Amino acid sequence: MSTVHEIRREERTVEQSADRTTLETPFVSVIVPVYNDPEGLRDTLDTLVGQTYDHERYEVLVVDNRSLDDTRAVAADYANSHDNVHALDERRRQSSYAARVRGIRRARGDVLAFIDADMTVDTDWLEQAIERMEADELDYMACNVQLYADGEETFASRFNRVNGFPIEKYVDELHFAPTCCLLVRSSVVEEVGPFDVRFVSSGDREFGQRVHEAGFEMGYAADVSMYHPTRTSVKSLLKKAIRIGRGKHQMRELYPERYGHPLALVFYPGLYTPSPPSNVRSSVEEWEDLDRTEKARFVALSNGLKLARAYGTVREAVERTVSRE
Image (tube, rainbow, N blue to C red):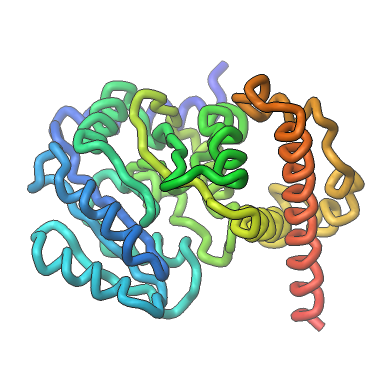
């Protein structure tokens, strides 16, 4: 006996298949949120404006999020010289999710594609991504992300690179894709709503799980790659870990019915206990290539980042508790 969930999916598949037969080349809106990164934005836009995809069938929406340098000027220069590039602003809220939602509201695309402002893609990236999305009849698709060191590889950048982005695991087991490599049909956003702009992190996870719960088809395109520079310092890795920890608490704070009581995570002992070397080894692709000293440093940094995430979780819990008093 079919469940309501399965029936809704079957009905939606029939409707979407009919739509796709009448629209051979979907119009795509590529949304690029950016904050204080003029050089990274130039690199990204250089690869986006030269796509093999029909230039009449895609637009690039650059959304500046209160940049304090010449990032806005870079966006304006590209918008002035390319008809399908548009420079937008999100001034009300400092949030990458708010910037993406600003882009969504302006977008004309049947498909929304997201990329971060320091990333690059091959010239046929969009063409390959849409072909894969259409062939597999996906509503929500993650691309592969290859990390690379931009310049001389530091210890931090190597750590970042070999840990990688386990995107296939994210999609298959956790039902979400990082926003830096996500394509989603605009009809999906119309049904489930956009990203929750209140998140500082984990908004991609909450959104993806909302899409999954609504019964849409999700998938991972391992052969469609995007390129992301590694973080070059331990400080930048710690900063990201703290932000992730804050996002974990926000998921429970904003959606306790889905993720549990906000304070349950704060009082969970596993949040603070060190991970054994075996756990670190399983997450590092090049573990056997490391010498003994490097392995020890990797384990130490892994546990340092775990504590940073715990700090972010506790900090967010305390700040929200204080703000309510």
